[in-house]
Image 1 (cartoon, rainbow, N blue to C red):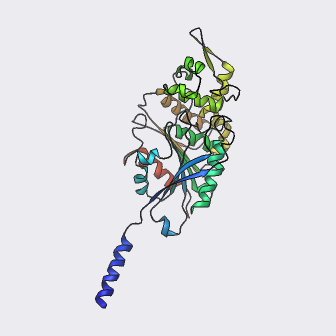
Image 2 (cartoon, helix red, strand yellow; image 1 turned 90 degrees about the vertical axis):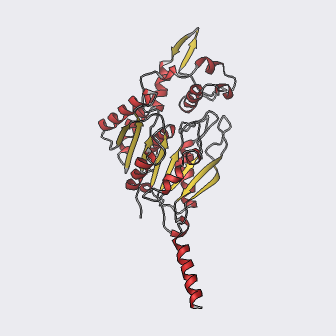
Image 3 (cartoon, rainbow, N blue to C red; image 1 turned 180 degrees about the vertical axis):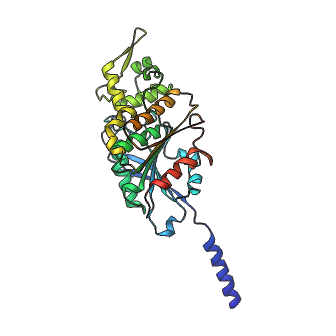
Amino acid sequence: MPRFLGLLLAALVVLSSQPVRAEIRDFTIASKAFDGNKIGISGQRRVRVYLPDGYETSGRRYPVVYFLHNLFEDEKTAFDRDGFARLLDKADAPMIVVAGDFSTPLGSSIYTSSPVTGRWDDFLAVELVDWTDRTFRTLARRGSRGLAGDRMGGYGAMAMGMRHADVFGAVYALHPVGAGLGLQPMWSRPNFELLQTAKSLDDLKADGFSQLFTAIYQAHLPNLAKPPLYADLPVRRIDGRIVVDAGMTRRLTDSFLLDRLAPRYVTDLRTLRGLKFDWGRDDPNPDHVVSNQALSRLLTEYGVPHEAEEYVGGWGDRTWGETGRVSTAMLPFFARTLAVD
């Protein structure tokens, strides 16, 4: 009997020393934020949730980071392709991470509410946050909620963070786009002949810039009376010439670009526990580099506390992996800015 008890105790010690693994769970939640949208975006939205080691047994409550994906991606990409969970497993501070599906038929919602695509602000800042706090043991308060994103998701983190600083307490944007005007005019990117003759959204899918900018126009220049794009165009090509509509362009830039939004939200931005963004110096699109540099100077001019860092790297090539920005900069940022019990 003593020998049996000894073996049993040894077995229990071994079992208790085994790590309790983190979990990734997939869900579909019903949203009302997409009722009546014009391009058939489903209100059944997919969500992926990362639960840290020991979540099931610890009994503690955790801070939450909401992660916004890049264009032409979805809530699974950072985990399935980029190994996000492995980086979270090694993070100094355990946290829950929630990634929703913000994709559309054109590749991105632009993280902006629109009568064409739906109320994305409500989906994130109301429905998804409420669902997360009801479903998991979270620290259900602003100071324990972070917002992060990659490239177009970085734009979303900055824009949503401005509009909903009462919901999210800290923001980190990885190489955000749309920070401001760059070296090349925005109208030089899409194929306006294609946009003017398209019979359906599918007609745009042969040209990535035309897809992306139509998504931007649907978000910031929506027009329900103009199918199939359901958007006004700030430029038209007439007899081979580009004709810019100055009024429409002003509407677009004032609504879309982060450097136009930031001065309106200075008071909100100053209440954040932390704000940081970064960008790769060798991005093949220099517009992203110069506009992020200028955005940081603008925030400094308005007295908005923030961190901004330019690193040697290109378009997303220094984001993932054990030496990438997520591991070395973003996760430590949230470890020191999010409130814990």
